[in-house]
Length: 252
Image (cartoon, rainbow, N blue to C red; front, side, top):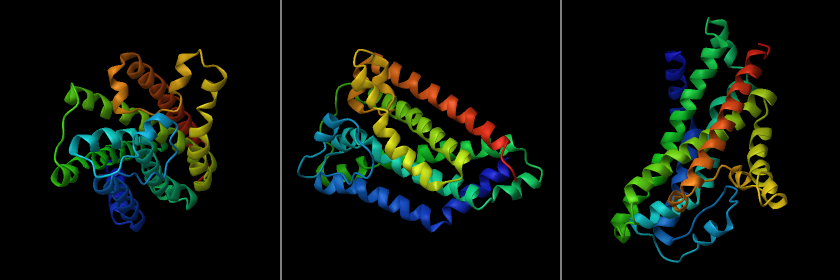
């Protein structure tokens, strides 16, 4: 399994698609640092959070932290592109045959992909919040929010789990359909549809967290943290397990 993980990282880092994706991602972050605007290519379901991103002028270091957090959908969509590069190409071109026929079990193959994807999520979150460095160098550090360090660590942890939930869902769609288009479609349409239950059943508080979005400002409310983590973990477990079952039944 270690060799599969190693090979996946090697293939990704030598892929033009990977570097183009990361350059575009960094560019959207730097737009905020230099001009106080966000190059938003994702689906943002929280209009209040989106309104706060429209400031003119560059961000300070701490503003970069809070405002890139409010634009969490950007991190998700660029991570999903990496999911497509890692799994989608393997499935559409049936490259997984080589590993399976060489003696690697389907479970080992699946888990190795899951580990690589989890590592890529960490990479994307590091890139997201590394905007603090150029923002501080250019516009100063600014004033830290109250309880910044603990709230920041919680935010990163919850956003990791939320991104993992989206990655599990998109991976399941890829394993089930072998379609890259279906996977991308699932995110853009799914992110919008997951907000609909709240409109029909506003009194059911748990439905507000189905979109698996989490922002820095939400940390102060413990019930939001708990409910977001619970929903995201359940979705991760459901689709990670379902994806494995689908892959086990897939023809070589």
